[in-house]
Length: 328
Image 1 (cartoon, rainbow, N blue to C red):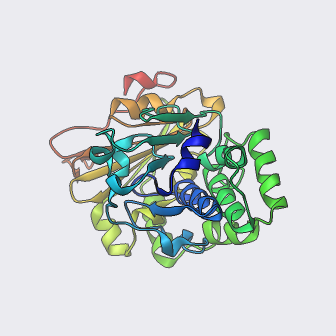
Image 2: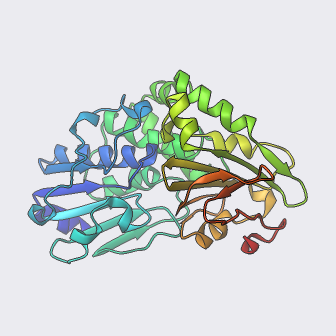
């Protein structure tokens, strides 16, 4: 059905979520390149700016950040978005005038679309596309392979996270055989930290608090921290994984005030901890995977008289007891 829909479509909008990561950008660029190879008119759309460490990817300059004219498209493909609202196009897409294809790997994906493909066992949406693109008679050249491998490498933490499966490694091997540039990917995504990123990482590490009784490692970054370090939310990539590396931590939380009045929580755990962080994220309206999830809430980080960090309006971040994430 999807193959027939793509065959009859000429103008195709490909989009993803706000504050995109390597999987989001990699999947959008890969799908867009593959469609252009079969002479489709493609509009790659990303709501927010591409993180600086991903600007090495081919065709990144073709991405538009302004709201595209959805009604003029024959079909819309939403990738790695988890929730349609995160594309910034939900209002236009929900009117049903244009067929919507949703492709994702998040277990908590809202599954809204004319055609929905969600494979939670995939380490990344890009891993899913390694099989899907050829099944749709869409080619994977060396540059498309680089885009896809970027998504797999970043979502698996360079094959170090627990979601690194035999299938993910096989997909990576196939992409390398097609000419994907692994060295460029690793250099850009893991070895190229700018000075603001190192400074903001230092702030986060300086504020780590642990409590073996509840099994958590927590740190916070304020909006003032970001301004003083000249850093962005993208510069905090990977920091929550460092928090989770502390031996006594069953899970980790990095709470970031990325804009005034807007907070983002990033959560990580490991299989042996038996903490499903997606349940914690869900309590705050977020979601994700068992071992990697996130949420957003309104509020401002402030210190109270006991020097404890709180979310303004007296909403305290309370931590669950070990093995009881629902207590959050």
